[in-house]
Image (cartoon, rainbow, N blue to C red):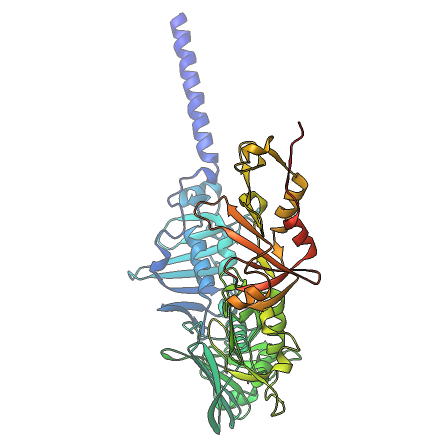
Length: 578
């Protein structure tokens, strides 16, 4: 009896489970359905050769790839490749969030029309290089607005993907158009360009070895122009973008090509337009023409090699119309661009160059650092000179030339009075005699005139103190260094700056004249760096407010200040008290 009851309850439970399974199957949600693909476009986007888009109420739009992407319908135009790739990327990365098949639709009591797929908002067809076409019907957005329903031809399923697909498809044809003034392939650095202003005014600009010249129509002689101004003009032209297009825009009555009457209506005929033609090594690269005013700050322009008319900023026409780039200065350079300077004053030649670290140095008559302030003052004077120079015939002249990385300016003869204003060119040499950080000094040797032996001080690195090297054993207690006197010397060395320069390119007779052949004191400086060469400071005769001095090889004679002289001559040691 008990076994019968057990079997009875078992069959009852089995019946309940079966009923529950049927109920769940009939009422199961579509999001639980099987997803048959992961993305809308599985093929590589490089395999897509054309795109066709049909939207309700709009003219069909198509793009074709003939080496580069172009708009084919509703009118022919160049397009921005980045926007085409963005559209294709939306399909190739549109991951399927969920899907429905016909069975799921019937269980839900739904049809395609409920998802906007009987008359889709858009139909997109991607043609592949293999000859296969992939078509997508795009329906309504999902209730939350974050997704959109999509169906593929040939597949019995409805997919839910990110709404970004619809946002890309919904762009108007004009939004894909290329906004730059030139077609693809224009050289970034043209070798020449022409500017034609109407029928008669014509200028050709040519760059050879980094130097821009200009030849005007009727005057074949090329004149030099300012390269920096030309570069700014070309960069602004190539970076400019259209504000909007006026032809072609897909109107039913617009011509397929730019006719003479169409161009004349926008001031783009040959009599009125300002046309710029760029040339690269291979010939004509690009052309743009500027016409009449479209508004207070816009003008019409024939762009992208005469394939479109657009509105562009008015300053582009203004800069092209006034493009002569001439400069009335003797040296048409920017100050920061000048890297070489040469001056010939009588028999002396002063040659300067800007080193890799941006510091000016003298290369002639001596090799030494230049005085930055003096060089900048000289450059300011030279770069402000206007051509032609006005001067009297009896003035003493200085020959001057400037150079940049790209070019060297002409040699000009400039009156010394205009250039130097009573200052010697020797003052181009820096008044910094040397600069040695105290931490890099390991030994100081003082040789005084008339002294039997020099005084040598060495830095004891272990104890971090200065001591006398080889003290006299007969003198009793070892001498003690005066720290204040030593500190004053080390401070003067970093840097050792003279009060003024006396003479450049010193001869032996000059050393005798200034008391430097047998100096009052010679200070030898040894450095910690391995292989370093001793630097010697020679201090000679007394002069007003200081003393004559020079460094080692004697490229120049300076006047050291009284303060520096006192520091180098001060007693440095005294015998320790017992």
